Image 1 (cartoon, rainbow, N blue to C red):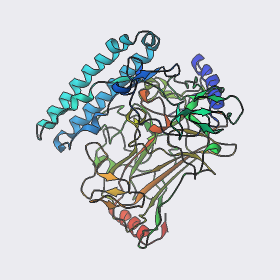
Image 2 (cartoon, helix red, strand yellow; image 1 turned 30 degrees about the vertical axis):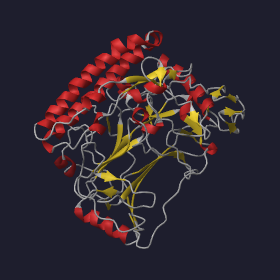
Image 3 (cartoon, helix red, strand yellow; image 1 turned 45 degrees about the vertical axis):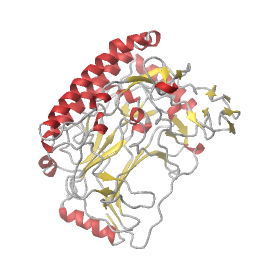
Image 4 (tube, helix red, strand yellow; image 1 turned 90 degrees about the vertical axis):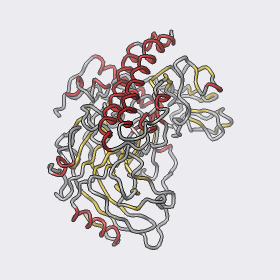
Length: 508
């Protein structure tokens, strides 16, 4: 993809917004606040039994729809393609509804009934129709699932990023002082403001910045990595652990392979991701790639026995510059704008189990780690890890790091390391694999496989705001970061990997 260097009036305004975001980021202590109930369209938050008015900082920010894929039973193989297409169609429906919401936000804030009548009810009708088609497709060869239509209604919700829950149950913003029952009397690290009762008065603390696309990130999405306490713990290795590692070198996407497809989640659907992906490894990967296409595709991996595909959302600088995709699907049409940043380093290691030996992955095993919709879905499947070089014992799940001079931004993906021993994919693309528990043990019925640990490093210019590509309604939240992997190692190289890991050697 050719890089452009044009500046528009909107882009110039984004530079000023970027400065505000950086000023608002220092001193935050990251906490997860995404698991609570979504806010309703009417301007009230919480469950119906515990509704309370939204405060002035909780203006409606996005559309929140239940994830239908998570409610699906086992999907027969004959119905999988049709079900995946309908799920992708529902993503497009949300994207289109979010655009209407964004275009008419001022009217919605003044008249919540407008959102119900003009956006939410029509969206519900489309989702009901899509769900009915899913039920029919499954019902042709298996029992028809019940109660899926209960997942059709969507709500509007506020962006609660700037409300960080403290240990005492109160809400504060800046971690610079001692919080007593939500009354933080400390100051921001830069001394710009004081937090009173959880309402940050510091500069940029209200999250006024909206990024280059107008839908995030905001100031509350950033934190100075130096203000975060070390939080990385590794399980103890037991006798018999597989202590080796295997490294594959597939480059940094220097050749610029991008597309907004996702052949795992939305096969056969162009722009199924609604955001742009970086690809390394297999170069045949697009929405229409079959297993045979991948097996016969070229690879950027140094060892040609690895034709696996590795992909993740691109990272963009919010610096007022645009790419050639500014008017394309996955780019500007889905509110992903800015300069795509090529990683300075990509490392892919496969490691073993702390409790025993690993077994070979099956060819064409598909693994997704993280959740591209974690902002609205909640963090049950979130697996984002953001940090800075020199500080990687401090990992952030729901904040972007502000790195000090000389330090680079790091994204780390620790993929699932347990396999059910039967399936290379599943209806929700998750249940055929699993994470080991805190002691490194796989769930009953699962076996340990080599764990992919993917580390992506970026040289972000000092003082420049950045954002990961996302579905537009996910507001570029860092918690939505995710990675995708399809195993296309040949059998010989996969066995070499397993022998290396189980034998305690380090191989590349």
